[in-house]
Length: 66
Image 1 (cartoon, rainbow, N blue to C red):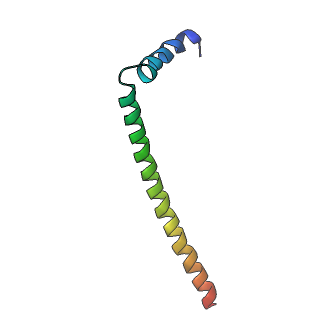
Image 2: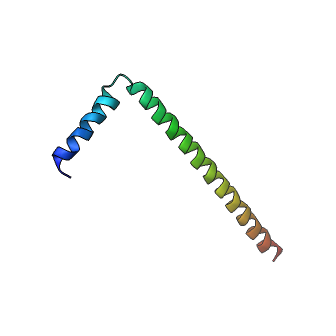
Image 3: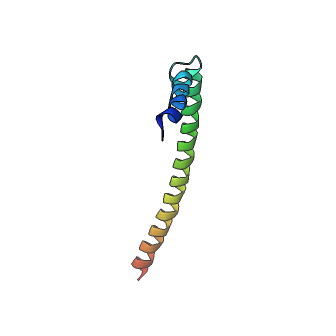
């Protein structure tokens, strides 16, 4: 990508996100959204692992029964 195309985007990012007056609000919103995404992913992974554990327990019980 050419530098003259990229520079305005970089400058706007720094003006808004790093040095802007609303930087704390923007960061708070971003972190809140990221936390919600992480919680949803963790819940999905927990459900997947719980189902897998049931499968494993069933397989072990079947082996024990012979």
